[in-house]
Image (cartoon, rainbow, N blue to C red; front, side, top):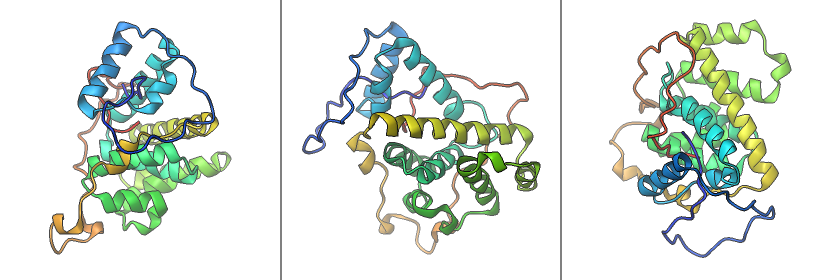
Length: 243
C-alpha cells in the first residue's frame, strides 16, 4: 500500500515548520494492519509520509488509500515504476500541488536515478528531452488533467502508436486520475510534505557518468508485459518511497 503515516519522523531535519492552517483530525487507534504498515514506513524511510498521517483518523479510509495507491504505483503493470512516477509528477505540476511535487519528485529521482529528469518534468516535461513514448504518455495525462471533456479516440490511438497496450492505457489513465484526486485533497486540507523528501536522491553532476546528457540517460528498464487480468497486487508488505 502507499500510505503516508500518522507517526512523526524521529529524525531532526532542521527548524520545525509552522503547523498547517487546517487542523488535523485526531488519529484513530490504528488497527494491526495499518499500524504495521506505518511501522514499516518508519523503518524503511525513517519517517511516516504526511499523507498517511492525514488519513490516519479513520482506519477504513487509511486502508483504502494504501490499497489503491500501492496497487497503482507498485502493482503488476506494463508501465515501469519510474513511468508511473513521471505521470504523478507531470499531473501534479499542472495542478501546482506542493505536496505531490515534493514527494513524487523525490520518488522519481529514486526510481529513475536521474535528478535532472525529475526536476525538469516538474517544471516543464516538454523541455526534458523525453523519448516519444514518454512524451505521448505525458501529453495524454496533461490533456486528461486540463480538459477531460475533450478526450477523444485519437488520444488513445496516439498512445497505441507509441507502443502502449490497451491495458497500459488503463493504467496511465488510472494513475493520472488518482493524482488529480490526491492533488485536490492535498490543496483542500493544506497538506505539507515531509522535509526529508527535499533531500532524497540528489546527485552532483560530477557523480553522473561522464559524456552522458540528461536525454541519453534511461528512465528505467521496460516492464515485463502484464497479464490481462484486471487489478494488481496490493502488497501491504511493500513501502513506497513517495507519498
